[in-house]
Length: 253
Length: 324
Image 1 (tube, rainbow over the protein chains, first blue to last red):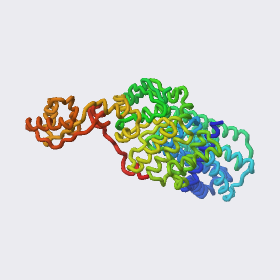
Image 2 (cartoon, one colour):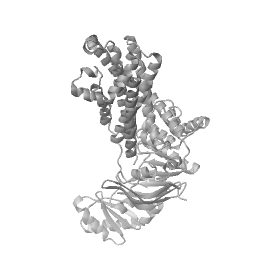
Image 3 (cartoon, helix red, strand yellow):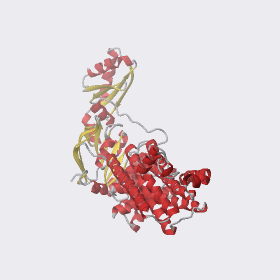
Image 4 (cartoon, chains in turn yellow, cyan):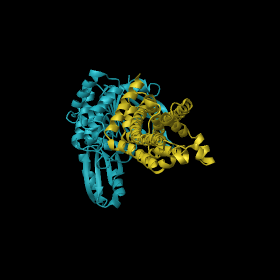
């Protein structure tokens, strides 16, 4: 009970921080939307002929969502560093609140921020006429998925921040997702890749998260895709929480 | 029961012995001063006693609770204001205290009442709804102190609470600390590198150097333990200092001479009478006196006697402290 209360209060604190620093949130949404618009504008018209994708705008929406989640999580790592450097993290550790809940508070806030930013990107996508084949239930599932992915990915950055205490390392941790995005089916289906890239895309969990999100937007309900996507998010989550737990133990030992 | 007890408390960082087997036994309600210069082991000791750092060896109990086995219970009983005022610049003062109160489980009306009470105690009512980032260094320290008190702890740890503050802010913090002990019976564990602070506040004092406690007692007891007055002699020619110390040491009544910071520090009973003999002896030896002064023993003399050097105070870079 105390753990849940701690997570709730510290999530509110981190969200308040985000609201009072709107420039950072504008940056988090602007960059993914910029690349979304440029990608769709530059190769959208040839996507049907080249890749067999009719709705390339809808195809690209999940890429914008994951990029935005990456930016958010990167800033969360920096937030943790700031707390450590100012001594505020110690102040939190000196309360009787469970220590894992202290870290989860900020991570949960990142989940909420990812959810909000996903909503904005979906609305922009609708303005670009992406449509949404699974309707409102699918949109809600997409938002829920973004919430959990935002938390899972934020955990990696929290782990880097706790282990290193270095702003540079925390910023670099946020970039981990970008190579994974480029080595996935972010810009084209696997079938058009070179053999080596097909192998990498197949073992890359981001591929399955993108395909699950795309199925909701442009294909309709597809149980297998959703299951694979959920498993990938869960795998990310477990890995990041284990790393975060170990980093927290290291910092407090 | 001791408020704070430790035996053989030790912390090593690789090859560095930051704290090297210290023993503590602090009475409830006392203001305990822990005096030492930067890097002597004060902060590491406080971080172990407040459960932020695991000791390498030794044992400690705070309010009767084991710092390792009962760490969360310890945290419920203690308030801590660390050296860097651990605050969040984006929150307001009131929001920070409210969050702190919530994390300690204070609910509804009690929480609001306590936050208002503390804001009044530390004179921050007018600034309560401003972002902490706009506060001066002194205001931040006062808010940090209030945050440490929000759950009515029985023991409070203050790590160099006045370092870098101007005299007015320092005086205000001293007033609050005295009030905590005298009116609320709170045990105060206070680290400091300021001799005056230790002298003014501490009922009980330990001097730490290189991770070891080298002197222990009340400030008055410590100064009395020197048992002599202190005559400080500076000679006109620095090259003659060692010879001057030798000459002083041979003057009848002189118990001991130390050379530190370009002066010969002479420990002698009844310094006022001895000073004439010292000057004459130096004159006979052909050593010109540059300056000579007599003082009753200070904590600095206690420190010098125990370590062989004066306490060096390191202030934080400009801009980190601040006015009230």
